[in-house]
Image 1 (cartoon, rainbow, N blue to C red):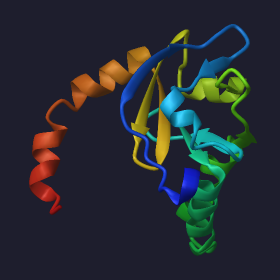
Image 2: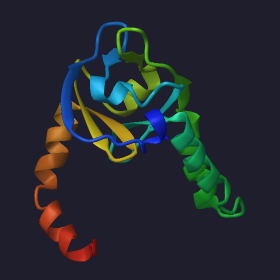
Image 3: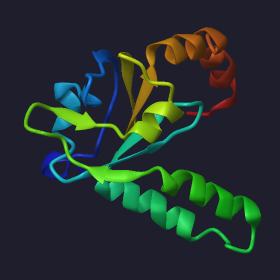
Length: 148
């Protein structure tokens, strides 16, 4: 839970620059959800994901419930957890991103940070615009499949 029992809600798209020390500002509206530590990990489609500690614990518990006798479950758990680490937002609203995660997501100076409900995604600007171009019809196509 976020501040004062409110559910964590991340929405919007923001552009920030990664500095030479691998630090990236988080939008002010996102920072308040990280009174405790946060976890940054590999995401899907070559982005990074940031979870608050309690949401990461929920995700980890779901992964731990998967059968370890299935190779795909073991591989997924290794892929997700091997690059993940716990950190904090510093006093200037920044997080430090490890070199391996920077390489995984092809991050350069210009980054895009998007809110995706209970998590944050960090994209290289080039990868984000490429993804958007390739998926420009996703709202229409998937909207027909999803019953909200």
